[in-house]
Amino acid sequence: MSAIIVVIEDEEDILELLEYNLKKEGYDVVGFLSTQNVEKMLADEPVDLMIVDRNLPGVEGSEFVASLRAKGIQVPVIFLSAKGEEHHKIEGFNRGGDDYMTKPFSLQELMARVRAILKRSAAAPELLSHRDIVIDLVRHQVTVDGEEVELTKKEFDLLCELVRNKNSVLDRDVLLERVWGFDEVYQNRTVDVAIKRLKEKIDPLRQKNYIQSVRGIGYKLS
Image 1 (cartoon, one colour):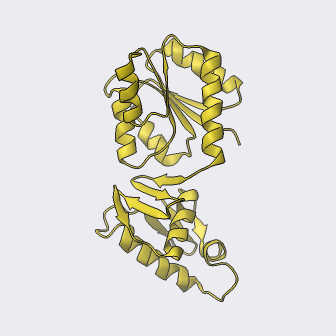
Image 2 (tube, helix red, strand yellow):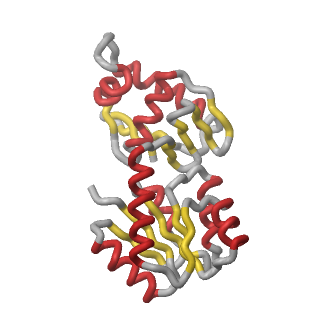
Image 3 (cartoon, rainbow, N blue to C red):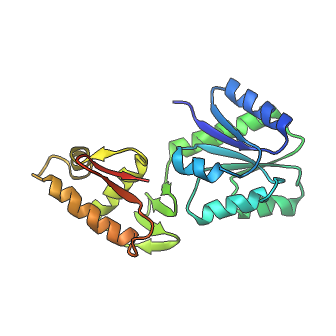
């Protein structure tokens, strides 16, 4: 499956140039002239990379990325900006950028950097995220809105499965197979109880409605 790349660039000619060349490389590309509606797409689609101009209308590009990072959204970002002084680059990295290129830029170099970041992130996924939930697969740690949440191993595995398949309905049998396996006898009630406990831990005030029940089928994360 092709990588999905979001480009946020307010100059239409540059946006069209980037879209054309990235598509020619085989990527699926979605372009935006501002940050409006980008966050909604990130919640709905598994985006692999963002290319973000810093000089955007409304919200400055690096401030927008910093706000995404604060919410646990860890999509890799390449900043593309006319702000090329050292302190601008440092600011961009400090606000969550993974790479930084200054305008005017070389298309060939940009494509090489895109390939490098996609290869690196595909080779070693260490984090899963959804909204303000961040799962550190290496440390076996879950944070919600920056606060660590203590989960059992089964609850951790269950949350990972839901996040990996966010916006898709997973029936109870699938969850039983993937989380509990076939080494013991379990029932659908096992899933329901685990989901209830997981909800209580990641959303104790019952305000965020991360996990939704789909009557007669199972559950989905949204």
